[in-house]
Image 1 (cartoon, rainbow, N blue to C red):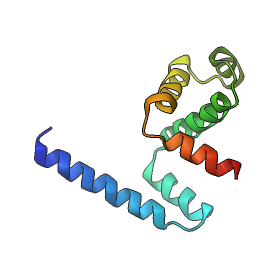
Image 2 (cartoon, rainbow, N blue to C red):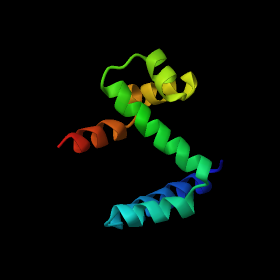
Image 3 (cartoon, helix red, strand yellow):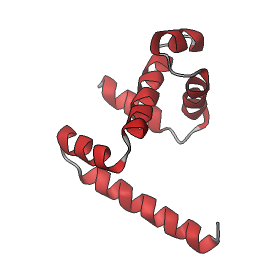
Image 4 (cartoon, helix red, strand yellow):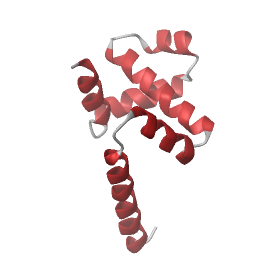
Length: 98
């Protein structure tokens, strides 16, 4: 990826974040996500969120796999993002608990 493409991609992601931030209801967010994502992509996002909540409750990875059927690779990926990512999971988990 060239530097120009990277800057363009960053600007595009920033624009997407701004659009999502402006959505004021769950119904609008859902409609947007259903148009933006394929059903499988949306399902994958929802599964990752479910996994993050279970990890946050201290559930062992193997038990998460057995309870949800989500691959162990996905469980590990979410856990790694929660530990070393940008803090997005933590931010939303904390917001949800308020």
